[in-house]
Structures are given as structure tokens and as C-alpha cells.
Length: 297
Image 1 (cartoon, rainbow, N blue to C red):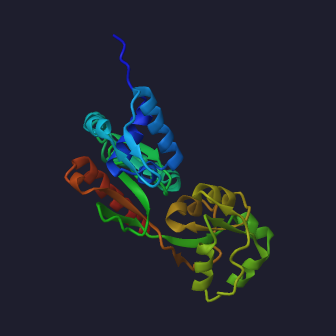
Image 2: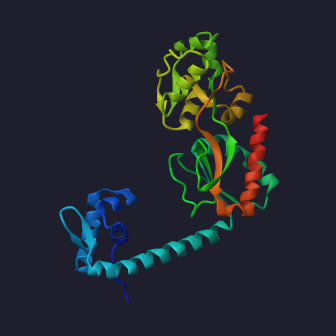
Image 3: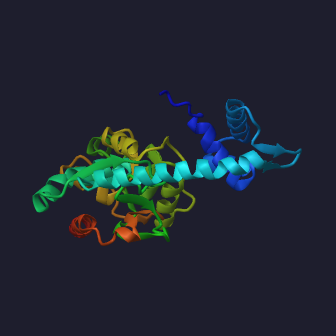
């Protein structure tokens, strides 16, 4: 027999709006507009053929039918969440799921995966990229590499790499350009910026040149982009020293100055505190710390 079920998005909006007794607060929780929540509620009421809320000019309130319907909808969502979490946990038993920002995944972690495989051949791993601005969903992720100041109070936080940034460029750019005898000579070059101009400002302040023109040059919204542009000789990038060891060793990037500026954001390994006893996480954490220590030397 065919099941007639109301639309899931409308049920989701109803559950949030009923719990808050506010379309505005439901919209904020669901990251949609007030109008979108109102539209979904109206669609559900039309589908059911009965109103679920009493509406006034300034507020909404569940009516008798809405109060009777809410426990049923909430129970369905609770069962769906619990069943999904159980399924995902079973799938995660097969491999450790790791999320990391693209730059860290591409420039630091992926080139070391062979070492991890050699040290722990029985440790399955699934690596996913995630924007450093996104929140981590730990129902679908075991551990995450995060960029920030280390302040995640509900998680176990393990420092990996400090945010030390140093000017770097292609040796061809340096060979064919104006000599870089002092930081003031950077005025002759294009500066490449990641996300905003703050990192270059901090670096110039560390050199004592607070009046330097730190805002010149293009801004990139991804560390991989500024890394590629620097390698291609498009300017001088302020790059993370730990993410560019390979290119420095191969002579593809050079450091005209040894001065480094400490960025506010470093790289951290984070995971839920209740997962600390997971032997897979412990092995991966210890291996990461060993790699980070070797990198620091």
C-alpha cells in the first residue's frame, strides 16, 4: 500500500516552530528566512487540511491539533536521528573518517599518508576536505583538523602546527626582480593575501614597519590558491612554513627573509571527549603528533 507522507521539509519547519513557538527563532535555527518557515508551515497545514497554529499580529501559538501532532513528529525525528547515527557509527568502524581544511589536507597530510600506512597498515582512513569555516558534524566524522585559536570547549583539542607565516616566492621572481635587501624592498613586488590583509599587516609590524603598504595585491579565499600563485611567480605570498617544507627543500620556494609572524590561528586535531578511548583515534593522534614534532625540527 502506498504511504501518504507529508513533505519532510515542512515537518522539519513545524517541529522547530512548535518547539520555539516562534517562526523567527525556528528560521534562525534552520538558517532560512522567516518567510520560508511560514511557507513550509502553511504547506503542511494545507496538506493536512487543518491549521496547527493560532496566529496573531505579533505571535504564533500551537492550537489543540498542533499540540497533539508535535509529539508524533518529534518522535519520528528522534528515531530517524538515532537510526542514522547507529548506521553511521557502524560504517565508521570500517575506517577512521578525518576531515581537514583543503590546504592542510593537500599540502601537509596527503603527502604523509604513505608514512601512516607503513606505521599502521591495519588502520583504515577516509580523508575529506572541509572548509575551515564549516562546523564539523561528528555524527559523520571521527576526528577533524581545525584552524582556529584552539577554543572549542566541548571537544578534546590537540595542538598540531602553530600559525607561523613567512614571506616566500619563486626563485625566478627573485632572480628577475628588484633585490630584496630589506623588508622595505617589498614595495617593488605584488603581495599575495589569504582571506584578508591582516596577516601581512602583522608581518610588517613584526619587522617594525607599521607604515608599510600591506594592503597591496590580490586577496585569495583559499590557501591552496595563494600557494599556487606564489609557486607560479605571481607575487610574494605569506605562507605557512610547515605547509611548504617540500617546496622549500626542492628549491621551488625561497624565503627572502627569515622573519616569521605568528598568526592568530594554528592547526588543531579535535574530536568529541567521549571518543578519546577509541583506539583508532589514539593511534592517529599519536602519529600526527610525531609528524608535527619531526616537522618542527
